[in-house]
Length: 502
Image 1: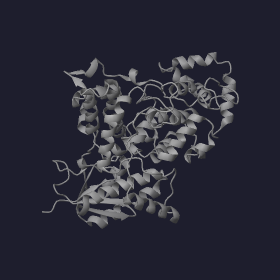
Image 2: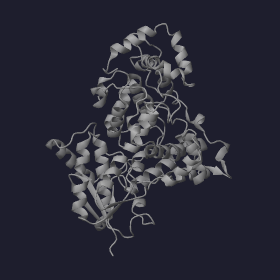
Image 3: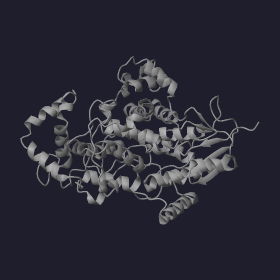
Image 4: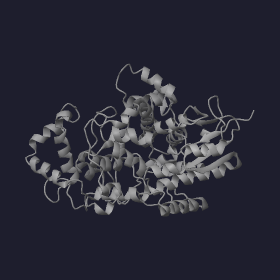
């Protein structure tokens, strides 16, 4: 009996998705890949994201050769029919609820357990059972993952005696530095596959079939397993030692700082999280990287990434509609179109330009600049989630829904975080070099040079003062409203600002 064909989705491109196992694809199974134009029609994605995903899929198909049937079709249903007819196929559990619902609706598709994560659903259920109704805090989950997988552990205790080394990883950027003096990150070389992808994207745009935002410059992220491994090796050997201290810092001329740029290949399935954290731990154990930075990197992958993935499935589809703060304002056109040139505020303009040009910026610009500005203005969290999904090369439904709704916009009323993550200009000033040459001043609340983040912060706290007063981490800012003699002027100016670019 011939093995059943196995369907590889566009974010299941590493070898761990084709390896046979007791609940995996059949040994020697023929493979199917489907390039669905409907996906690009449905949303206005960043052009660099569309390029990366198609390039990665086509590169994987070229590597697999005759073992794969690569089909281009209008829809997945049409493509599957072309590829296998009425035959039964297997597929590893898709990463999003809409994709899982689609797979289950297609005749003859058997969904296998998920792959590509450290924690499976059964293990997470065990952790949930042990919580006994207590809050599902990421810190507790992260410690459990480290123990379960023996990550940065020594004799049953955390390496170095502490679980959390965040204090060492929150330094502002070095004084006077325009960039960190680090070897550059891995940069892939484009090839004829990239050329054909770009030709197809151009043609579809000319035909009016699809429309994109952002710019499609040279591909900056790996599209192959070999490239992803090269990027991992280069980061851990040359950049990891300097990652930790400035993990939360921002420099206008150095958008990457010490970050790994591995989120895109991880979310395409080209890397497995176990090999990423394992290689980082080895660098520490062999004396080539400091513990604090390695712990910060392990926390990002084994902690936050795994936590977000499990919370996405645990929270259910209703989580998508969370809006505890009642924010309904639409995203303005300048933001939707990544029109950085329309923005005066240097921090927001710089970060928007980074997204426009590359489809990426690291987690602090996402949270404290883009997300913080949106939270202060009361933008619709569902619309903002969709924007992040479309605009970032590493953006997928399971990634962005918890990150934006929970972490960034506090729309779940603190289910994932203990406080709203937004700030005045003082935080941005301390953690970046944006403010020095900006027209606005971080310590000014009123007048033409009032910082939109500082004024926006106090307007946000005032708008939600009753709710925030009950939060022990926000009680002090709420009490501070009484000391702001210019609060009426701040609120009036913020109301007049509207949705125009700051």
